[in-house]
Length: 210
Image (tube, rainbow, N blue to C red; front, side, top):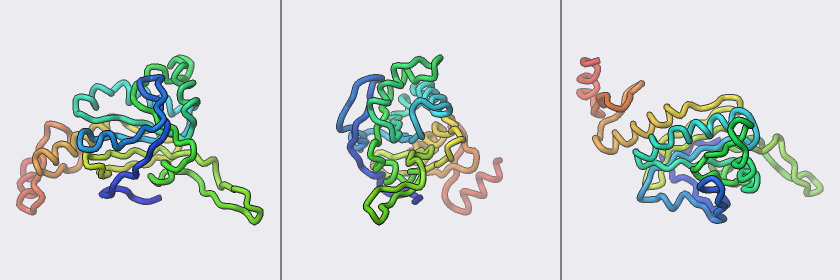
């Protein structure tokens, strides 16, 4: 599993469900280049337990992302038909009805692989048959991608560990604060707090006030 921070986010084109039910066959993050930051997150499987809690949590906070000009995009290794079916199920029945942001179908698993979040490895045996060491689904990866398409923040959780959407928003705020003010963000920084200049004098000044 590689580190993508500071590198260009891998480009792809794949089927996705947008606006809660519309299938788009050639969805790409490239449409946001020069216009929006993107929070691109992977989840393991449709019709599971932790995953809908995360997808709903992002939807519940979608206005917070939108007012910051940030696009939220989800992805798993399920098919677009599976995504669509899950979107028809209500939250009360374990579904994700009401999710409006795009959900990408990484059916051939190349997107998860290129982002370094694919669980399991595959090879071919002596007969040419494909063999895999696990179920070949995605870890809970999250990538904050800036307007130039560069990954600025990366988080990968194991399958049982759900993510904190408020932390994703905090990282968006930190990136936008740095880009606007040129000041770096210390530990536990939150929007509205002071940053510090990237120098010994700037750090000393910040620490003297805190």
